[in-house]
Length: 484
Ligand code: UD1
Ligand code: MG
Image 1 (cartoon, rainbow, N blue to C red):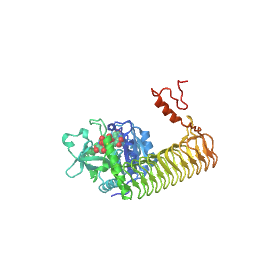
Image 2: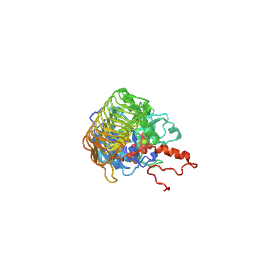
Image 3: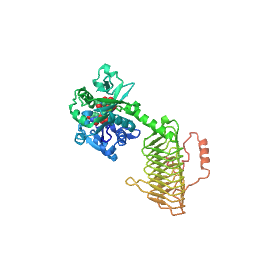
Image 4: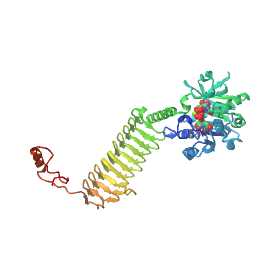
């Protein structure tokens, strides 16, 4: 056993993913809220430092790089997707002259955990064969390379589904696509692989037979839980892996003291954090980098993406919140929408059918029904009446609205931005506010009501007296009429 041997990891992510039927590279598709390749990179860097990880990119390489470049991994380029062996060979100039071990991972197997990789590595370091494969046994091995073994259990060859005979297809032990190689031996043999298979590709799996013919042993370590190496080739595989990631996340949170009603219905991305005694209703979705503190209520069907939700906040059912911060004890919804950098202060309340965009809403303020606040700064203890609208867009530019502390904005007020409503002021219902309202003033901007005594009664009497209804009647005030 030689613990000192350096270890590199190569992750193959250059393929098109034809079976996905997609314009996007397969490894960019998401499961558990992250691109597939990101899951694999995260696992790899738990095993070796990031600068010992090479991601092989090709199809949509720039996008794949962008998805994982923040981890500090390195990249190699496969110019044409000529198969998995060719993809590994694209790291030749970086790795071919190194002593040590090379672990190959496929970018389309995102459930793999670091403990399994450590087990594979430990076996290899102890026995030192030319290669150690991770294998698994499946009830339905369709699509995977089948493992052919010698009587002593060592591996003789891997035969790909498309090249397999009917008998070989019945073999249920398959290749996971995860290998540990003696690096020198890999580079000694990889160029001998030929594309003589129905797909015309250079199959990395063919190296096993080459090693075997040269008398070099190939070992296999069997995976205990085959779900860990589920490879994604179709959208059906993607949905299956996504469901497994969500189940894992829900279980992890429930064990940490979060209540989840009907956990099979919720969607919680892998990076989401949720505090103890928070309750999550059916069909809720917590996405991206959302952080939810303790004792929060997330109502049924509510979607929260990249938000920070403070302790004891109550998010009623069917709200949609994105890129916003909700302070402790605030109450939101049902049916509310916050987007683009909203800030909701401590104990504030936002009711049904209220939308806020890029708005700061101070502590204790309330907007309980049917309002739109965009690019607004609302102070503390403000009341926003039902139907209040900020007119923040003039067709070209967005303008701010300032509503200072303790202002009372009546129902159905239209605030034409830029405009300021002073502290402690009062805006009459139905006003259109175009000019600043000073502190403690009343702002009123609406037409005066008129009352015509007895008008309705006279109209009814005229209708009753008329032989043909709806003729010769006094028209309602303000209506044009053909009668002169
Ligand atoms: C591969 C294995 C198969 C194994 C299965 C496990 C081969 C020949 N077959 O089949 O034995 O059971 O994975 O999931 O290796 N890639 C490149 N460049 C290429 C081709 C592929 O980078 O030219 C990358 C893909 O982006 C993908 C990975 O390699 O991440 C695997 O390719 P894929 O086409 O999915 O191989 P499988 O048919 O699944
Ligand atoms: Mg695959």
